[in-house]
Amino acid sequence: GPLEEVSLPLYFGWFLLSSIQDKIKCTSMDFLKTLDTLEAFKKHLIDFSGKAEEVDLEQYFQPTGILHCTTKFCNYGKAEGAKEYAEKQAVKDFYGSIFDLSLSALFVTPRTFGARVSLTEEQLQLWPADADAEKQAESVPAAASLPLGSRAHVTLGCAENVEPVQTGVDLLEILTLQQEGQQGEQVEEMELGTLTYYGTGKWLLNLREPISAPACFSSFYG
Ligand code: 2AM
Image (cartoon, rainbow, N blue to C red; front, top):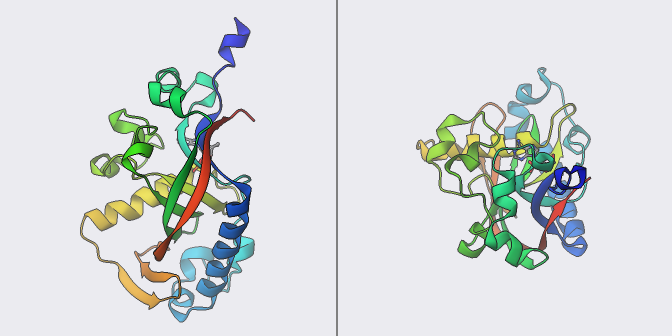
């Protein structure tokens, strides 16, 4: 019946608790502010604006609502594997539980701003197991050889007219470059960690101290 058809959510994921949301918003805004002022960043401005003109990164990225790490995009059951995921034992068992997510890096591209999430073995039980889970976003074929859970992230902001699903694609692109042995250009030791440039507007800040973020595993219907 119709009820059954709407019984699957838009997505499952970990929703960051409100106390940590504020902290992360502050930290990430501070990072954007600092990045904006770096000579190395200014040198590559063309990646962002198509011109060598200044951009205000804090304005450039629009916030995208409640901070979360999507595990499975279900699209109300229309996405491939949605039903199978919802029926997984781990999904049922852990629904409503609090986890500690480890945010290990921040990354910025001309399209998106996000935080990489490094999942534990336990948390990986909630990651879709299908081999191409990483390709849910579909446009990074090389990412198939990355470890399961590589795409895990929190979207912190998107450029105008960019959908949040792009954040995972951007992260996978950076991780693929790393895996192919691209060292990137280490441009700066910042207070938060080491900033590396991977070309074409891709910046990654490896956090010296990962941010530990308490988050509730649940789902979003919208
Ligand atoms: P995000 O996980 O990168 O933030 C609702 O659109 C949520 O589901 C967003 O959080 C979004 O991106 C995520 N999402 C949308 N489409 C997706 C897809 N095809 N694959 C994986 N996640 C998707």
